[in-house]
Length: 368
Ligand SMILES: *Cc1c(COP(=O)(O)O)cnc(C)c1O
Image (cartoon, rainbow, N blue to C red; front, side, top):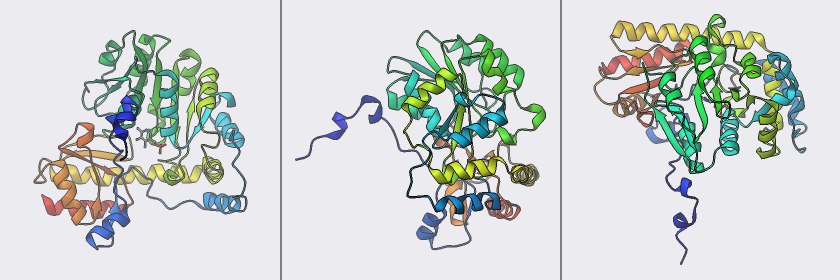
């Protein structure tokens, strides 16, 4: 007889639920026997890989028998130069998800609290719970972070605060003044992770000088990713920029080869491909206009978004978010239900190519 493994596992792990990823296209194909499916569910970049990346990948294929550079030397150097920091402040991750988890595991123990906002990225509660620490989810304001309430939620037990800016899944955005006022209030022994996964989509004039803040707020950790505007979600590369001592701790805990050799080279190539990044951002801007113009004409409420996705109210679509999601699946369109983020009457749609957006608009139109 086997033993009850549930009774053996760490306390925090027991209550975890597996991460619900966006439904893959082939899975829906298998289930419904339909083709021509459009996936707008995971905030992926809809553009094909640029030639700069395919060339770098092809080149690296020759060396796959070797381990990757464990220190990611060249990618860290390139990032440090671009950001104006020292290389010893950069930590690479297998997606930024990896660095978010490293930070939590380094600083948070079961007796601690982790503060984040309602409707926040699901990875924050997930890592908190896995450690067995106490999640403190602060009520949202206008669908986004209520930074005053978050500052008030900090206690002697708080070790870590997560803020996503722009936020996923609501797309809300905090101004430089709001963030700065918050950072001023946070005690220096509470780590603040500013998750800027959608940074590149924010108009330059509105971006916060988050990297410059690192010298003033030594408890700040900024995370960014190659998964969104840089278009490399499948390769899993992200990074944190922090105080060198925090980076050193992350470097101790991370897996020795947490970023694979193809991903290192691809990220380096795309980092230098300014044209691709500009095209990603422009495609997103046009697509956002296309979809929100439709929402407005159809009388559908949506949350104005700074990301590459937009969350809308399904009230006029004849069902809950989960029901409308299912109906759209049958029409060959995969979006993201966000009941798990406390938004059961909304759906999140990622911005695709013009044709993909059109297919979504048409499908949604048949439900109204
Ligand atoms: C997509 C996303 C990430 C990035 O995930 P990766 O692991 O880098 O692919 C991080 N934070 C938020 C809020 C996101 O939406």
